[in-house]
Picture 1 (cartoon, rainbow, N blue to C red):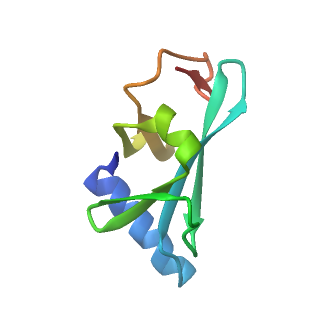
Picture 2 (picture 1 turned 120 degrees about the vertical axis):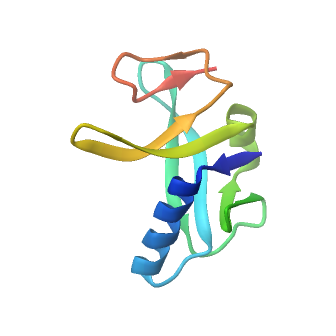
Length: 106
């Protein structure tokens, strides 16, 4: 299961409204970086047949079956730190993150 905080859900909804289309957001992982894995995020216009679908605060979150083992029970938040703001992934499966915060390992 993947959940969004109310603020993260609001940001996704606003972006979908600006785009004028979309079913929700897809979260996944890819192999990269010094720790091995990085989060991916894309807005979804059409659900893939193999996608797992979760709903949080009236926002659909899609995850491919290969990524769910790394993302199960993750919370997606929206944070603002100084001049930077964006989605923050609070993942209980992470065992470490690289120093720059771009990649993680399980």
